Length: 235
Ligand code: BTN
Image 1 (cartoon, rainbow, N blue to C red):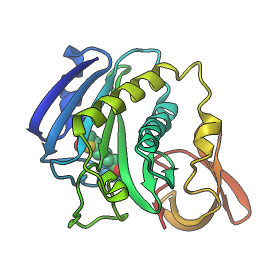
Image 2: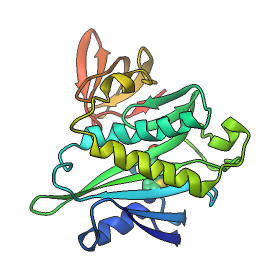
Image 3: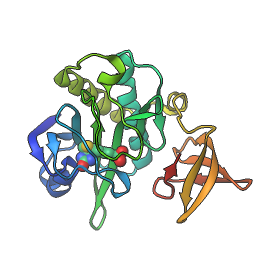
C-alpha cells in the first residue's frame, strides 16, 4: 500500500481523479483538511482536522465492475473497525453510510473514471473521529467516535486499522460472502422513508438489501429493486 498525505487539499477524490494514471492500484491519499470536501448528490462534506479523510484508488481491472459490492463492503469494513472500539448500535444505511444510532459517523463517495473504458474506481471515505462540535448545516445529524466512546482516538492507529481492513476486505470480494453479515446491520430495513424515485418524492417501505446490493422497496403494492443513483432518501 502506498500513501500520499496532505495537510490540506481540495478533495482527496479530486486528487485521485486528476492523478490516477500515474499511481499504483490501492494507493491511498489522505488529507488533514479539504477545501472542497465532497459528498454524495453534490453535497459538501464538512470536517475539521480531527477526523479521517482519505480516498483509495482501485485500478486493478478485476475490481472495476464490482461497484456496488465495493461500495457496501467499504462501509462494512469501517463498521467492523468501529465495533472493535466498543461502539454499539452501529448500522449501514444503504448504500454506504455508517450510523451510530440514528446519527451518521461515516460517509463514502464512490466514483469512477471512464474514458473509452472504465479506468479506475475511487473510494472516498470521511469518518468523524475526534470532532465533537458540529456547527454546519447537516442533512443527517452527525456524530463521531469520540462522542460515542468519550475517548480521544489515536488517529494514526485508527487510520492504519481502517486502511488494512478496507484493503483486506476488497481483496476478498470475490471469495467471501459478506451479504449475510451486512444484512445484520441494515439501517433502513422495515422503515418507511421518502424516496426520490424518477424525480418524484414517494413514500416507500424498505424491505431490505438484495444480495446484489440493490435495495428492495414497496411502492403502492409494487416491489421495486432500486440501484444507487435512482433513489435518495429523506427520513
Ligand atoms: C457522503 O456521505 O455524502 C459521502 C462523503 C464522502 C466524504 C469523503 S472525505 C474524503 C473524500 N474526499 C471527498 O471530497 N469526499 C470523500
